[in-house]
Structures are given as C-alpha cells and as structure tokens.
Length: 269
Ligand code: MG
Ligand code: MG
Image 1 (spheres, rainbow, N blue to C red):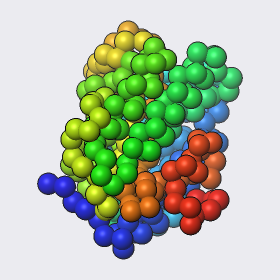
Image 2 (cartoon, rainbow, N blue to C red):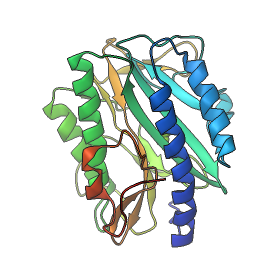
Image 3 (cartoon, helix red, strand yellow):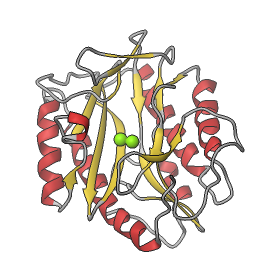
C-alpha cells in the first residue's frame, strides 16, 4: 500500500529532516583519521536526542546502533564499533531519525583525510546519481525513471549498480512501499503523485555490482572487494517539483538548487 502524505505531514517530515541533516553534517565533520566508528555513533545518538528526535535505526530488526558506518568495500549496513578510521578511507554514513512519528533517512559518503583520485571519482559520481534520480521525481513521472537515470550515469562511468538493495517509500515507517530500485526502465512503475515521499539511495560500486553479506548478518560488502559509495535523501513529490527534506548546510551537491522549489533559499537548518 502506498501512503501519500498531506502537506502538514510533509512539513513535519521537513522539520525532522532538518534534524537528520544537521546531525549527518556534524558526523561528516567528525569523520577524521583516528576516530572510531563507535565514536561517530555516540555523537549521532546524543545529537539526535538533543534535537528532539529518536534514532530510528537503533533496535530496528535488532540493529544495535544509531548509524550505519560502512568503510571502503563495505556498501551499507556496517555496524559501528572499535574500528579506527584511517587516512584514505572512504566512509559511508547512513542515519535515520524519527520526529513526531515520521522517519527521515539520509546517507553520505565522505573522505577520511586524503583519499585517492579513484575513490573521489566514485564518491562524486554516486552523489551525481542521487541528484539525477531526485530530478526525476516530477508529478506524472514514474518510479522507473529514477533507476534508469541512476544506472545510466553510473554505467557511463564504468561503475556497478547494486541490485539487491533499493530505495523505498518513507513515512511513519522507515521502509514503506514502493521499492525504488537504482536500475530500471523509464516510464514504468508507479506514477508520481504529490505527497509521495521516497528515500532514494544509489549504492554504486567501483567494480562489479555483486555484493555479499558478512557473518555479522548486516554488513554488505562488494563481492570483488572494490570500493563502494552510497548517498541518500528523503524527498517529497510536490506540484512544484521534488523537495529534498534532508538537505544539509554542508557537504551538499552543488547542483542542489535545481531540486528545490524556487521559493526556498539558502540554508537547510
Ligand atoms: Mg538510509
Ligand atoms: Mg533508506
């Protein structure tokens, strides 16, 4: 079942999205060589609660932390722990916060210290994939338009598009219908209507698209050990176009102004 959100509910999600975005921005700045992923998780939980929300991931299907921290060949769902970040690591941070009953979900890949040119290119292209996917969220368009746009851009650069994990509807539950694959055929799938809120999240690999899950039952890694990147926003379809509910003040894509209604300006929080 697809749940469309009222303008008032979208406004609540926008307020919650600001919390998610703000904490994620703080984590991006804290992700330095020598820091453990567990430390980032502690910051995340404390800041989400201070700002009046609840860490959505904690306890979700038994997940023990407030963020996912996935390093290098880890694609998503890395469990924060004693691992220390090193200069040159590529870190993906995924975060969810529940505010007044509504979830917002967002992720970024960030460089730890100085990263290789190869890693930077993968990171940049993945962020571009997200923005291209968001641009498809126009009334009358279709869910398949997102995957088609994401995959075309990734594959143009010789990258893999993860198949096993997909974006999703988001609202009072973190994972609602519809599923939003990062591949597909334009013009197919559910038609976009105002009030549809999606979490779009391209997971792009530096080599083959295949992944496997580690023995911890969570961490998804590339099967060939190549790097992966992951960017995600929570976005509402509106009559004025897509509205990103998890826009950050820092580390946002330079093209982001193309994806927010003209009435809005500047800062996200
Ligand atoms: Mg997420
Ligand atoms: Mg998600």
